[in-house]
Length: 347
Image (cartoon, rainbow, N blue to C red):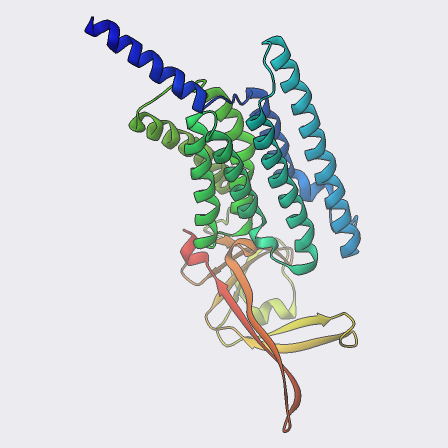
């Protein structure tokens, strides 16, 4: 009799759990959104280049059109395939499912508008992290009513986007991570779904750790392997020799500390007349730059440190800018410009 009662209690508990997690995310949903998002992350800049759209406003509109077309098309295709799958299983659209779907579309719209806004207000450095947070939030919300694994993975994706900003990873590394989370991680997650089965916490933790290992390991390994290698026996020449005549072949140009580096700033807009300002900055430490036939390849390092590409190592920020008006000086604009080369921190 006790065994029968225990079985009934287990059955009731299973029914309650099934009622709490009544949604069912389709595997094709994760695959479609993942492949589309990963492709946009990897190839978007190649599709819409600055040479094709030199005017900033037109480039922003082109990106808005591309994101709307791709994400809107994926959403429509996902809706059609999901409706067909439900029809085959003789299932109806629940009220909660429709609301969760609206939340997902809202998050995609926010990401699209955020991408469009960065062309005018800046902040493009944070785009990859922002998309990761939005994707993770969408997975977490869906997981509250369907697969428990979606909650775990969604929280990890949110943490990945947040940590990448906290550690100030370079944009290229964040782009590779975001592309892997979407293009590789979401299809992998589709294969890991177990249709709402109850699992102990340690099991979910192991699943999540394995997912993170694959999703983060693959892009970081690929990113490192694609970096241009610098030969250890490459000849080094001084900056004075380089100024006299640019050498043929691959060379390392040694720039000594104290070298004056002119910084050109082009001012445009309606507040001031268009002008070009040049002011010198002084190099704080010896710097080495790799050149090929007199043209920099993008590989730089401080003397004695590891090599890194310039777009990964060089960080420029304007944390503060304000305008003042005083009787003595009149109108003055004060700005703070922070520069840092992180080659030593990257390795």
